[in-house]
Image (cartoon, rainbow, N blue to C red; front, side, top):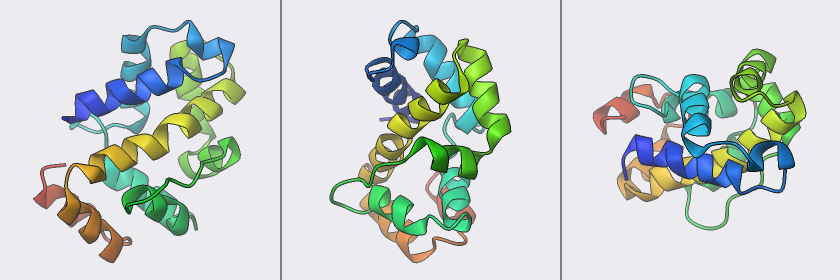
Length: 144
């Protein structure tokens, strides 16, 4: 699964969540908004996302997404704290939804997206777990 497929998967999760504001949105539009807010040149910048959660004091949370087993849920408040209000506002504006819907949409999609990327490559997951603080070089070595 390439990074664009990860974005599409995240978009499907958002479209299928229980929020009426997102259920009527186009999957392609959601994926494009995800890429603009969470992406880099590769389509989904996992290194920046994992770094942001780790440095924000949520390494246990992101570790659950990287490791095998169930993913710890992500709250909408943590999304805003880690990604920042500007990114949440940008995402909301791109999709024409409210701030609360945008935060919840990102909270619904991020754990599964990170989990899927790391499930594809077991050694990537191991390296991320070992190098939670300095993962940029690890990600580049795997082409992310």
